Length: 125
Image 1 (tube, rainbow, N blue to C red):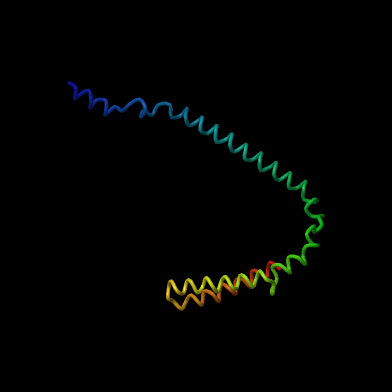
Image 2: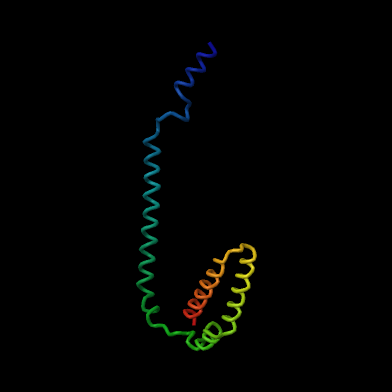
């Protein structure tokens, strides 16, 4: 008799597995999703309005860092000491990697790193 009660409970399922109340839960879920969608729509609308209002402020600004242009070029431009130290560091790291890996392709990587550094500092200055 004990085994028949056990199988009877297994075939019927527990109270947690019953499908009743699914429609009510679905309505609550749809209401919650609708509320979230309205919140996102309001937030996006407020952002667009703020963007339209602040547009003239962005368009009529002056360059506040124009006086620092010479300093940036002398620090990051070609021929500066920072570029020289980058080249020296790249060559030393390349030698260490070559000693560790014993692959001549490391020297191709050094050339590529130096070219990348030259282009990057050229863009920065």
